[in-house]
Length: 266
Image (tube, one colour):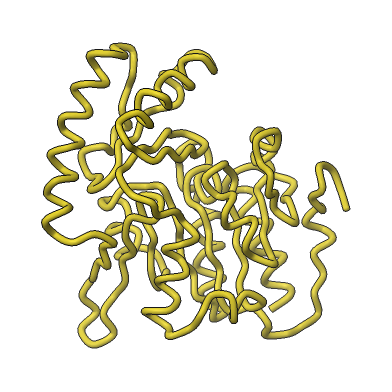
């Protein structure tokens, strides 16, 4: 076992040919590098798909991104906004479908609530900056962590939001707040049951997960084969459950290294 209880990726040597079938992956700072999707990272995703893996991004990213990812990337489904929904292509007509965790009437209340919440936040924290993709989010308010200048400010905004009944999740770039009790893992389990008629617990040994941040902790804890890109090191002090293996490189470069290791096993 290596540093902080994680093993280097070079020690990932599992001989069972054909054991793995599903790859769940975070997006921001796991597939992306400084906000960009590098050509070699996208090629790695394509290579894994060509090998027969089912690839499922599991992200705090907005509905607008998820729709685009499902249309443009070789993936079979996308879980978005920290688990508020999953999107998939209907096998009958290839139309994109969205499985919301809340009914339509509640979604309308969410929209109104988020609008009011934004104004309250700006009144109380004028320095706060929302994510540029806020316009295409359905459920959550995403605050740029870079607009918070200290741990004290971060804690103040968390208390402000929690006092209004919101759930808080923190990624590598955003503080996400929403009214709901979902997370990445709970919706991943729901998706596996509804789309594949499989319990995630029963196919755990056929799955891999790779991520980088605090909101990936439920996934690190659950999956027997969990990986972190190198930038997960920035969050180790706050992670009770850490990935089993860690890549040498950060971001998309780390994902490429992960893909090569997984391809060798395949």
